[in-house]
Length: 382
Image (cartoon, rainbow, N blue to C red):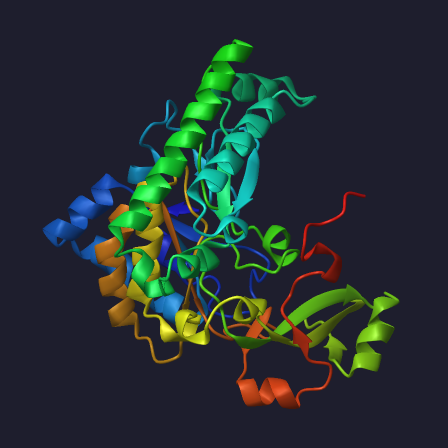
C-alpha cells in the first residue's frame, strides 16, 4: 500500500504492468480526505493518480484502492492497514478474528439468521481468549477485542426474497434486514463482553471473500454475484498429488503451472449449483452487471452491515474503459473502505473462466456446482 501523495506513486501504480513482475503481490493506493478534497478542487496530481489507477484496473486489475478516511471512523488508532484481502483494518500485531454466517442456508428466515449472527458474535468474542505467545499481540487483542462477523451466500439471500442481484441495493426492506442483523451482532457481542468483564469489541462486522467456507457448501462467496452460471474452475495441485489421476480419468485438462515449479493446473468445467435452487431469470452473472451495479452493492452492504470493511471484487469485461471506471471510482469510492477491480482473464491460468451452457454440456468431465458432495447438507467434523 502506498499513499497517493508519495513522490513515486505513479511508478508504484504501474509496477505490475508486466504480469510477470510482482505477480504474487497485491498492491493498493491509499487515499484520504485530503485526496477527495484535492479531487473536488481539481488538483492535477490527484486527478492524474485516479486516472492512472483506473487505467491499471482496466488493463490488469492493479492497483486496488484503500479509503483511509472512511476506514478511520470508529477507530482509536491512526496506525492501521487492511489485512491482505481487505475486509478488516488492523493495528500493528493485531490478528484477524473472523467467522461467517451462510445467508443462503436461512433464505428469508430473518429470525433464524439473527440467531446465527448472535451465536457467531459470541463465538468470536470467546475466540479472542485464544492462546497468544507474543505479548504485543496479546495487548492489542485485549484492548480492541475486534471481531468480524461475516456473510456469505448473499446472492442466494437476495434470490430467496425475489430479488435479482442488481435489485438488492435498491430495496429498503433488504437494507433494513441487514441493519437488524448488524444490531444483533453488536448487541450480542457487547452483552457477552460485559458478562466476561472485557471491553466491548471496537468493531463487529465485515465481509470476507470466504473462499473455501463458501465453496464447501456450494454457495456464492461473500457478497459476490455468481461469476457465471457455467464456468471453468482452475485448481492447483502438487505434481505428485495422486488426485491428478482422478482428474485425468475424468477428462479434465491438466497443464504445468506457469509460475510454480512441480505444480499442475487442472481445469474443471462447472455448472453453478445455484441453478438447482432458483429460477434462472433470478440469477445474474457478473458479465450481466455493470461496475456501477457491483460497487453500488458493496456501498449498500458497507452502509447497512459492515463496521469493519468489505472484501469485494468488481469483475469487468474488456469493453470497460478506464474513463468509465474513473467516473465510477470518483462517485463510489467515498462510500466504501476499499475497492478492487479485476478484468476477466487478465492473468494466464486465472482461477475462473466463463463458458456457455453449450460448452459446459460438451465438456469432458463436467461437474455440477462446486460443493463438496459430503458438505451439501453440512460438512462433517474431522
